[in-house]
Structures are given as structure tokens and as C-alpha cells.
Image 1 (tube, helix red, strand yellow):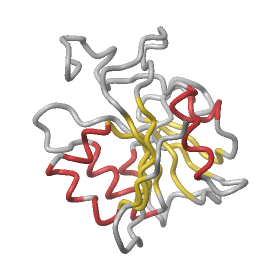
Image 2 (cartoon, rainbow, N blue to C red):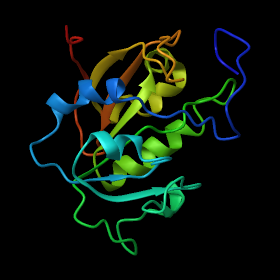
Image 3 (cartoon, one colour):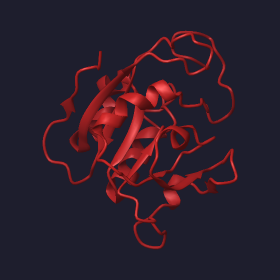
Length: 179
């Protein structure tokens, strides 16, 4: 169900295709020639827009080139990172009254392995449970409101890209929204 409506989720995982306009604000913040792992690849929407994906996985992959794997199975030792320099993904958003689950534990886990860029609802940055990952938040890049349904109607909430890195020391840097 949506936060500001009675809109039911598309499926049990709350899967929504990541639109290209949500990926575009991230591009200027990535190193040239970045190699990344997409751990919640779904139907590969991010991979289709952003070059450099060396590995893709999901609990319920929607394409043959995406491996079936749970985020918790990704470990530095025992799972080949395939030369990935970072994770870039659209994690499942937290659902009501879950204190940030499943999002916050996934952020903590992945950011221990490699730097992680993920899309988050903008409001999440102001919730108490975000305090768990605030110390490892490096940068916040506003996206604004996008059409998650692909119907041209913008969503009712703002989203942002956040970079998390367990090695980070200091405050997050909030970037201005591009014109």
C-alpha cells in the first residue's frame, strides 16, 4: 500500500521498475568506467541504462542474465565480486511500522563489503531508524518525484540516491538537485 494512498503493491516484494529518469541524476556522481554489481536487479532496468554492470542478482530474477541470490548471501569471501568497485541498486523500500526493514539491514550488510549507491524515499532520511546508517552515509543526490508506474504520472513522494560506505567518517554531503 502506498504511503499517501490505498494503492496496493504490484507483488509481494513491492517491485517497481526503476525508470531511466531516476538513474540519470546518479551518473555525474559515478567514477568514469565504474564496474558495479546490481544486487536487487529485478528486471535489469538499472543495468539497461547504466553501463559497467559486472554481476547482477535478485531473489526473484526477471531475466536470464540475472543470478538468483539473496543479498544476505553476498560475502567478501566465498562469493566472487567479479571486480565490482561498488553496488548500485534500488533496494526494497521499508514498509510501514517495520523500523526500516528490510532496507536498513541490507544497507548495513552491503556497505560493509563495497560502497553502495541505492535509491531511497526522501522521507527515510528523517526517520529514527535512519540513524543506524547515518554514520556511513557519504552523499545524498536528490531525484525528485518520478513515475514508478511508467504512466507519466509522478509519484507522491521524493526519492534520492544515497551513497553508503562502512569506511566513511564524517557527515553526509547533500547535493543540490540538478536543474
